Amino acid sequence: FDGADEQAGAISYIITTDDEDRDGDIVRPMGLHLGNYNLNPVAFFGHQEKPIPIGVCRSPDGRITVQPEENRALATIYFDREDPDADFIYGKCLRKIINATSVAFVPIEAWRRNDVHKARTHSDQQQGQPGWYFNQWDMTELSVVGVPSNPKAVGLEKDLMGACRDVWDREQKE
Picture 1 (cartoon, one colour):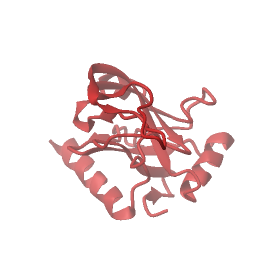
Picture 2 (cartoon, rainbow, N blue to C red):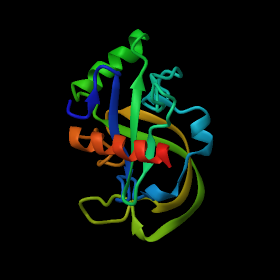
Picture 3 (cartoon, rainbow, N blue to C red):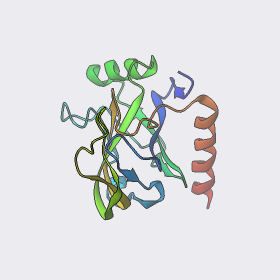
Picture 4 (tube, one colour):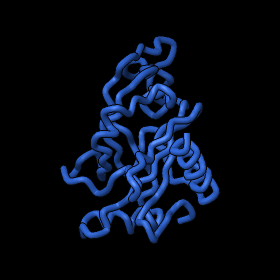
């Protein structure tokens, strides 16, 4: 896996983008509020399939490793390599068997995208309610998942992981 730091047990991901997801929603990356998440930056498998965290988005030196950008938000998960279940999931992620993430959040500011409807059938009939535009949102947890709602919420390649570290290092100096 190109976006992994095996020595640290860390893997970096795109956790959301400004693209429409499979539910017809858009989650604005720059609308991410981290104040509450920073207090407990946990990562799970499958949105708490097991209610025990498998890692954290906090580097060994204490930095929060979630970074919103204009068109996407990034995160590095440091897996709990001493927990056999977390280490098992880490191995699946390292081998790209699991290569996606999903964010859980509380909407702060959102509105219906009335001009956009969710999936259509082969007969082109509208199905379900229109999607949402989440302009501001309070992140509660991050999960690695088999199939994300946002198809672009996947593992970072090595060159992008280095760029993330550069951004985080610059911010720490400011």
